[in-house]
Image (cartoon, rainbow, N blue to C red; front, top):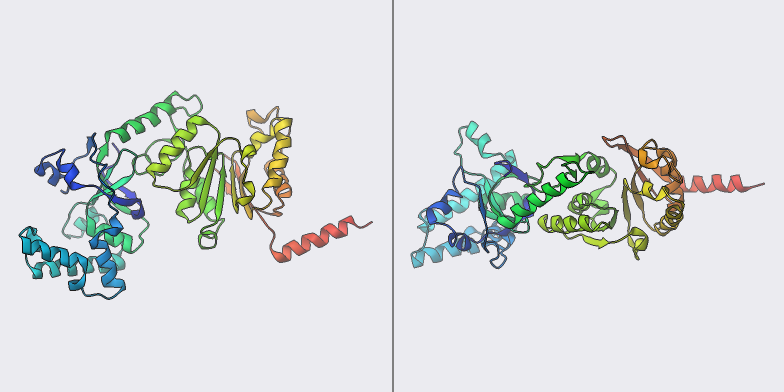
Length: 408
């Protein structure tokens, strides 16, 4: 079922789970256990996750925090405060909000929580207990049938985390939809049946309920590639991932602000690619087919070619198509390339089998990206390169050298 506490990006918790729908499936006492310090973990079928979608950032709590802190509005004028006053008048107020004084006190507690987390960082409830602070439960979430995270409890801490743009917070998963559990089982069975995967996913899956699955590749390559670009400079630019498999890199680069397109030809991989895109609440595009047939290659600023281009060296016919492909990529500003190892069995009878440095140089020349930087090495020994347009000074120097070499 996964770890009791997992760390997630607060931005990935956007939907709110309907307490009314949950109460249709369980007693009030059991529902309260979901908000306790040691909540149970449930698997539920049915349509509890299908209520009209409510977005957390549109709640009066979050909007009132923004109004108070960023716009300087007094708590008494916020929607959150006014809602609780209505509950007081109609007799439906909770114990902690029975008077106006109680409501204002809770507002100030909320503001104090913001200040404390801003100064000291976000700590787990276990850490707070060690410091003799009052302990409650972590933020709790549910996972809907598609794998998306839905908020259940801990609204003040989640609101603060979103307001401060914290990268990760601890949460507890308390409910999983039965269809999501079935999909997770489908992944495991697929990997166990595949002679190539041998029981492991190809690349670590960046989902809190799937991150514990054994993987052939972890985050090491992304850690290297992340250093190759400036996220602020590349935000909004277009990335093409050739041979995207299940979309790990598109998930990661979209989180950095790029607009991504995944190309994958294998039908089964595209199925998992689509399902995991939905589970991660990502927006990148997916195109099924061969990259040779993709019609809009010239639209992209950044090309990911990770452990894929060497397949185009194995046969003469594919090599010739590869030359045309690289010419079509000449509008790109950068290619992030992962090369093969020449001694690999699959390359022994290849039409061309270049060593990593020569292969990087070949791709750079054909795509007219003369600046070649070796970024590092993946755990399996394959090299990672950044191919980009030359800086003006370097470009001028290269041009002069070429002109000098061409003189009689």
